[in-house]
Image 1 (tube, rainbow, N blue to C red):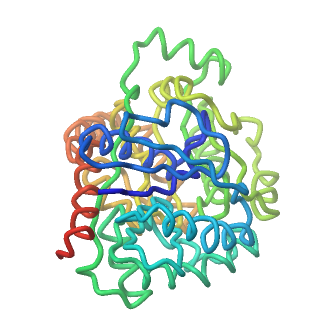
Image 2 (image 1 turned 30 degrees about the vertical axis):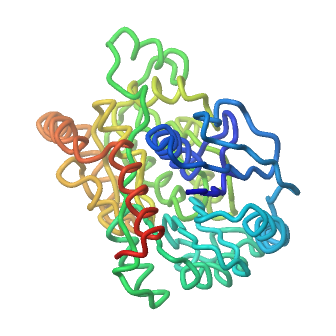
Length: 377
C-alpha cells in the first residue's frame, strides 16, 4: 500500500501537542510496516530525524501553510495534485486537515474541537477557518481518530457524525520523563525559582487554558498560606489577551509567577520532575498530555473536573471547578497542606500511567488505517 501523510507539523525542536503525536506514532508505524510505502508531505525543509525508516519518502511541497488562505491552497491544490499524481491508497492527516477535492480515502485525526466551543480564543481568521472547514473535514473523512471518549462524543454530536466512524487512540507520554533526585530538584529550583518549591503549568498560553484564573487562584493561595512557593509557567505565548494581562497585574504576588517560555525537551523533563505539583486547569481539553508527564515524573496533579481530564487522570488528580478561582486556590492549599493527599496522588499516578503508551497509540492508529484500507468498521 502507498500511504501519504500530512507531516507539516513535524518541525525540529518545535514539537507541540499534535507534532509530538505525529512523531511518536509515525516512527512506530513506519518501522513496524516495512511492507508499505509512506510518503511524508512537508510544506518546508524537513529534518532527517523525521525520516524514520527506508520505506519513507519525503516530499517538500510548498508554500509553507501557516495561514488560513494558504491552508486552503495547500490542501486543495498542492496536496490534491500530489495525491492524484502519486496514486496513493490513503491520506493520513494527524492535524485533521483534509483535501476536500480529493477522491482518495482519508483518515483525519481530530484531537478536539475546542475552537467550536471557544471561537474567540484563537485569532479571528483562524477561528473562521476552523469552524467553516472542520465540519466539512469530519464529513469528508473515510474515518476519524481522536484522543479521548470525550472528544469522540463531542465530535459525533457537534458534527452529526456516526460514532462508529470514530476511533479513540489515547495519547502516550514521551521518553525522558521520570523522577529525579532531591539534589537534582535543588539544582532546578536554584536555576529557576531562587531555591523555592513551585507549582507548575505546562502548555500553550492562550485563553482556553484558563491562566487568568490560575494567576488569581495562586495569588489567593499565597495569601492564605504565607508560603514562599512559586508558580512556574512553561509554554509559548500563543494568544495572550488583555484579560490575562489584567489578571496578572491584579496579583499581589505577581513577582512569584515565573514565565520560562518554550524550553528544550531535557529542560522540560527536569522542570516537570522538579515541581511540587502540576496545576493544569483548562476550561476545555481533548486529552491533556501534561497529566501523563506529571504521572511519569512522580509529581501530583491538580486539574479540571470537566471535558476529558477526569477520563485521563482517573484517581490520580485533585479536581476543581476551572471556572472558580476559590476552588482552584482551595485545591492548591489542600495539596500544599495535606501530606497524605499528596503522597496518595503520586501513588495513584503510578498506577494510572500504565493505561497509556505511545506503542498502544500507534497500534490503534494503524488499526484505524487498516479499517479505511479494508473498508471495515
